[in-house]
Length: 219
Ligand SMILES: Nc1nc2c(ncn2[C@@H]2O[C@H](COP(=O)(O)OP(=O)(O)OP(=O)(O)O)[C@@H](O)[C@H]2O)c(=O)[nH]1
Ligand SMILES: [Mg+2]
Ligand SMILES: [Zn+2]
Image (tube, rainbow, N blue to C red; front, side):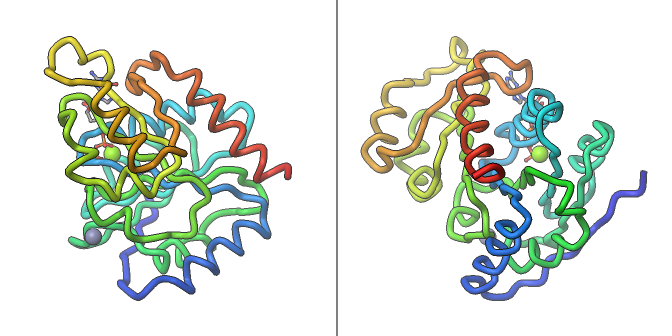
């Protein structure tokens, strides 16, 4: 199927994110903002969530990328409604773009919108896009110092996924260091070790996510 593409217009944010949030509330849709470095496993996590939860909830996806439609095509092939946002170089998604994209979805027949933010450990965290839940991925090969070096991404988030956990044995990665650092800056965040690609260790995260979803769409 032809992938719908939207170009990002940069415009300042705060009121717009509130409007997005109101629209989602009116339609009882929960939006989940998935953030992390390039290649950390955002698309893999989104596909995993779809595999696990599309029988229970009506899921749609916003794919953010600087260019191209690779990730959106992968989601489209799963039969999930998806719109590709192309930021033309910008390194994060802004609320204005989400607001422009919402009319492209049938919000009355959607429960969950998963947003794949731009691959970047820095500024996506600075921009509220009207989301209900933030998930920040740190994959094992990136190193165990990333919470200290990129604190905002792991401070302003609800869940930290230690992805590619199957790679732990190949890297000098001190999991306790990461957990301690995360606890220091964000004691409320849940931390889940996982292999998103193959679906190992995902159950706790899926249960946690279902609680958030149910609170919003049934509450
Ligand atoms: N070993 C291992 N590989 C993984 C895991 N999750 C993702 N990968 C691989 O890591 C690479 C990047 O995964 P993606 O899901 O495309 O990551 P992304 O964050 O969406 O990447 P971009 O959108 O390209 O920035 C792919 O080759 C995946 O197969 C995992 O849990 N374990
Ligand atoms: Mg991706
Ligand atoms: Zn940016």
